[in-house]
Image (cartoon, rainbow, N blue to C red):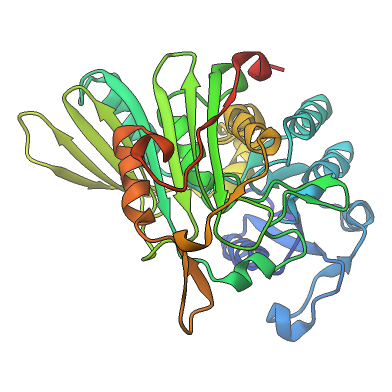
Amino acid sequence: MTPPAPVPVVLAGARGHGRRHVENIRRLQAKNLARLVGICELTPLTEDEFGGELPAQSSDFGALIDSTGARAAVICTPIPTHTPLALAAAERGVHLLLEKPPAPSYAEFRRMADGVAAARVACQIGFQSLGSHAVPAIRELIAEGAVGRVTGIGGAGAWVRDEAYFRRAPWAGRRRLDGADVVDGALTNPLAHAVATALALAGSTRAEDVAGIETELLRANDTESDDTSCVRVTTVRGGPVTVAATLCAEHDGEPYVVVHGTSGRITFWYKQDRVLLQRAGHGPEELRFGRTDLLENLLAHLHDGTGLLVTPDDTGAFMRVVEAVRTAPDPAPLPDDAWYRVPGEDRRVVPGVDALVAAAADRLSLYSELGAPWARPAHHHPPKEVSPR
């Protein structure tokens, strides 16, 4: 068999997180799988910044695709631009890797997903944790009854972020910008993987798998968006999926998802592809897995029809959570005595939040149910708001 010709790829958004995509495309270029033919940025990159000879550059994404003959595009731009850019690529028959969260609202997500489907282009959503080989392995353990009947899935993310993090871009820390939804926030953006991975392990990834959602959104920082929040998704299957997150942790923690069973538990540190299986009658087993890169998976799909790992429909339930966060009351500012500023570090810490985040994932409870003095009762998003379309 002749090896496939490298796929011409354009990248929208090459700064910030986009630098990782530059490095990854270079890695795939070295394997002769891809060729970076264009970069879309409002301010062109310099050769020094790019670290080598630059491909074509333009601030007009459609024109860049037309002039380069790209077959695939990576979109790593501000959240409100995802849908228009994805549709611009789809209209030109260009296949996509679209960064998470795929859109700032469920309506925009549907417009993107329906447009991509109508154009018959492949679209992968950039939840890298779902490329981990641990995900199918854990699903198999659950199916075999390794931990008995599953009673729920918890997720925990306790991260340290300084105040500059919320000023890194005009849309950062915002719920809306210039009249458009942004819906940045702990659950929807930095710790979105915890939510998406927990839903994946629950076998509840599609919009119609969601029966109801409860949110508690709070903030210690002077922002619009939540930085200390939790969500509980009631799935059609019946089990709760509860994820707690904070960007105001005392110590930076490794985020994880935990499967609770009647005779054991499975903990998955999704950034490390590391799994701990604890079950009745056995000693604890630690398992480590590889992962498939999502752009590489998209290129394999184009070459030989390999199944895509994260299609838009597989993020429908996650987008229901984004919509619940979007339509919830604005995050409540924490009282002044509920946080403190770390001297010399320009960051805000909520004392005791690390333990609360872990307890929420462990007990499948919300902050208010755990007795956090600053939490307010959950906002309920009833099932009628989460019908399939």
